[in-house]
Length: 144
Image: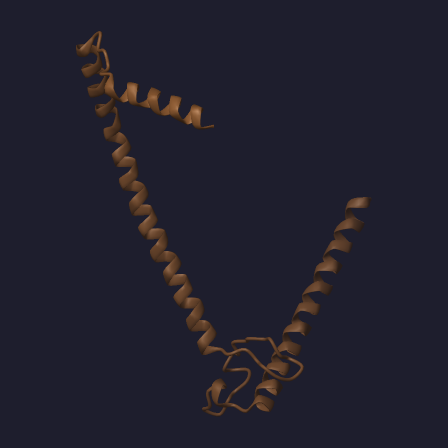
């Protein structure tokens, strides 16, 4: 291993000390200039990429802020059989008598959210029944 390291070091020293041989310096200069000129549109692309990265970052920050706002405004139920639900209740269906939902006691929240969930489940079941009746009628009419 030591002999190999010594030979590698000596070869690297020789390569560092030797100067490159230029056969056609003019052609090399022209080639370098052409590559520099080609790289200018690439800089425009990177500018567009930077702008799009800034805009997408701003949009992501806005969405995160909105999600945090929604989480803070409508807290998740912690106890009861409806634990884990975060529901924005319509004011017209479930009046809170001037109270905020965050000011209600857990039992009151559970009652209101329970009614809301039952109403939503009933609406969903009604939509499913309507959908299945439409599908059945469509199959019956297309079979003949």
